[in-house]
Length: 271
Image (cartoon, rainbow, N blue to C red; front, top):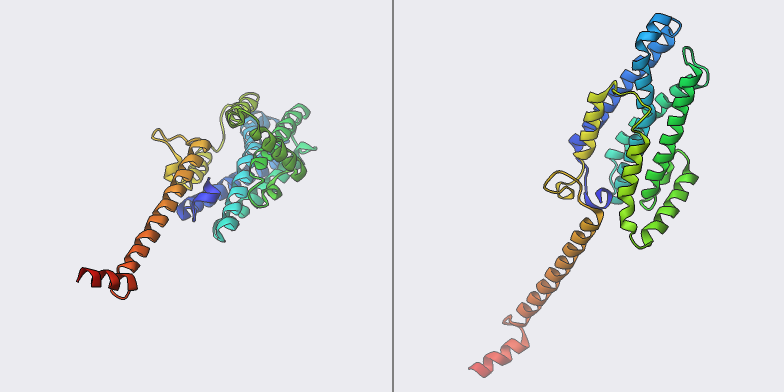
């Protein structure tokens, strides 16, 4: 709805997204550099590992939103012929990809990385990547969104499966099940507190500010896609009716102009 609806994304929202994301990237970089430099210090490792672990989990799971939002923004630019928001989202994605590369380097034998912790983080990475490709699969019909997936072939497979499911009876109920599943997938086994919760909140708010107000109901929740399509169809129908009425009125006005032959004949009869 955002890609096909809004002609222009909020400039303030995209600026806030870029600013908060860049600050978060800087924090990630500082944390990773400090961990590599001081990992040999057992006392430091014991007291700071929870902070480092939270940062690693944040980088791994946060990539899901970064990739999906970049896909949406770039699809919006191509849909409306714009070039403003796409470069901003791509810049953030490149920075996140660099942070991800550093995390993977640590997982395959970095200093101070316990084998059990590395295994758990790797499982989290695989889970996040799979969910990312599934969400990108939902957008596959919007230009070339699969280029932002971790595995483009897997995203296309998800896209085909999702398209088939939506054609089945009750297919519109699939999305609530997806939301419930994704929440369950990340509810356990992670740090209880995010090290950059303030910036995560700013990033989420900046993304939501790019959506049109009419996409939300009176309680602030997203309207259903079915309801939005119904509203758009009603608006399109009303627009067609207005155009037909306007054309009929202009045609009638043309017939009643003094230079019109029927107008002249009617006037003579009247006289």
